[in-house]
Image 1 (cartoon, helix red, strand yellow):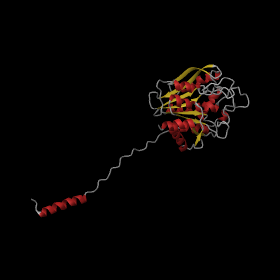
Image 2: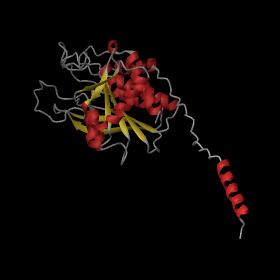
Image 3: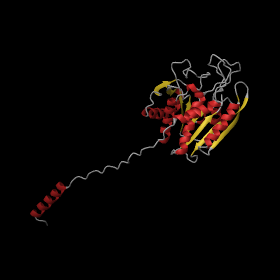
Image 4: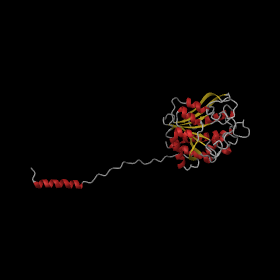
Length: 328
């Protein structure tokens, strides 16, 4: 048995050890350093030239000579940036009973990647000037309505060819978007007469089981002081994408163009991409609350020419999209 003095000694020893034990400091988890994302600089001069080139062919109305020549040029131009170019053709009948073969033009980057984003625009122009006061039956040049979105996407394609994004990208140019039935048409009413190219592609994509995480449509993105708002269909199907894009634009200093306000529903190519293809897609489209149509004042008139194109607006849209794509 231990004597009393020994017991006292042991107790004191244990007590001293306990008092001298320092609490262990918690090790903070190592934080990964933020990787700075290098985003290319959008070249608005280049985009402007791309718009100008389209307009130089004349009105790109389906089946016209200007349309055919522009299609050849677009295909060749895209092939200088990527070998993965597809021309999707399909027979259509327009509201006036005419038969055409539409051409959707698709340029893909990193087609082997499953993580993809789609960028859309329409490359045709209106076959009539139904909102003009003169020569209403003549086709328009469509510099802004048609040409501007294509010009921005061509410049993006050029940038993608220089610095490949981490994700796969499909640039898809729809045909026959603007061959819709006018309000005063003498022909029987045709349902879904607009956006024929996107309707066809949404039902029959260029690739079997095609999937993209989301899509961004550009329409009328080149006019001076143009403003873009949260269009209803975009909010309904792809509100998170709207917030992503508008937030990027705001941080880049483009809040004067990308306004955080709601706008009414606009029937555009994104409606069919959302409802048929099932790809959540937003529409970056000019919305002017001061005009009767809520579109650009030169919409569907003969004044939709190169005088209607502003490099600052092209830059705001193009740089925002580059920021979105390279941040993925």
